[in-house]
Length: 267
Ligand code: PXL
Image (cartoon, rainbow, N blue to C red; front, side, top):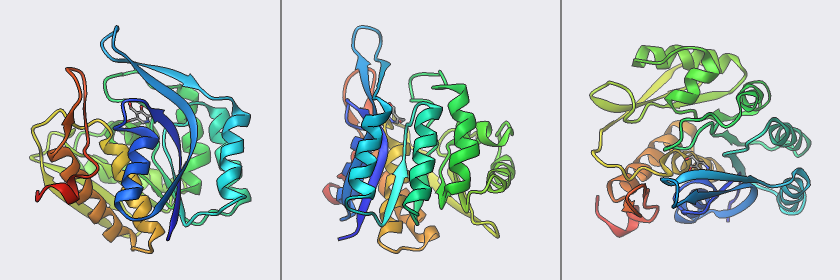
């Protein structure tokens, strides 16, 4: 059984964050573990705004030690880390334990909130995590922040991928998804030598909560199992598209990706 770890926030509503990661790991048949960085509670009294409760650094460190010192992993991913302090801790542990397959999902915002979590955390992701990434998986907003390029087209995505590769990430996967003004949902993978383009029809749904986390968790599971990156991205994209197509409306504010969709529904 291949082993995976997510270092991420807890999404109480269950679609994103470490819940998305663990559900995805389970669906891919890898053993999932987690180190929780913060708890996100969505507030029913204030239009589902996200309230963030960070955990103390020593609590996060103890969990990372449990897994990396006590058990070991075939691949890990990071999600919402929150502060520069936590990012520094994660960078230190990646080096100390020489983790071989590292997926950095540079989470800067939650859907439904426009606020970047912490501007200096974005800087730390760029300086400390990008250089340690086997693959970094920004969405368009995050890729714009990391590259300094305001992304409006597929060409912009490619230029941003080159810039982000220049930060030291071995591979860059920019999740254009439905956000760009293109006819299809397009993601770009750059491996330092060539670009791979992944296309899918855009879906008319609001049930996308957790899609980004799920996508990068699925890539992590693929890498843990020894799947080559382009193939791991392809199967991750198929998995997340099925999850979005069969998304679960939770209330008037949010609908979640369905992690079990690939085995419950035919498309
Ligand atoms: O989808 C981004 C995200 C990541 N991690 C956690 C979240 C969210 C969005 O709600 O709650 C913990």
